[in-house]
Image (cartoon, rainbow over all chains, first blue to last red; front, side, top):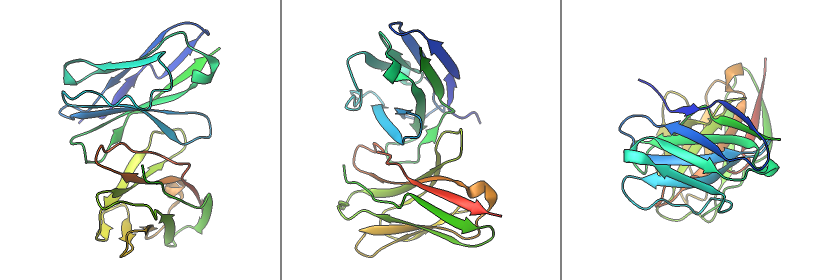
Length: 113
Length: 109
């Protein structure tokens, strides 16, 4: 079956522009996570969706970052007024249950010029 | 969130077993121990997880200390494709994974 997919795979934008990153989780997975990974660093948790519960936004670095998950499936991560420090690989993961293994997508490499 | 401590790097020879240690002295009773690995230019990949008992799967084995304050990921026969960053992570009630810098495993042919 299909794994987690993300689009675009690469995004280059200018400082100050808004960007939207998309994640298609594995069908039937109730939990969805967003992480980011800066060059040479470990993964940084951003936000977590579980079913119809309120999302855990505790990892969002600023109010320029937001995410939504429509219909319990596809998720979009939006970064407004991008800054150069936002440049990173943004990874999405999904899991069948809250406690089960997470399957990661290939990531979106964001470059802010 | 409880934290884990891993060495920065380790080298191994191909075809030999590899033991990757992880300390988690502040682990709580409900924390699961997860291991993920990340190959170059790829997203992380699940390896194994456990709570109290040792676990085996087709990829690796996980040995958990009796007091749960440490664990060891065991790759029984390292291959060149096992060269990656291995992350030891504790997952609590909210299942949020907090990745550290992991341990970089190099495999010599």
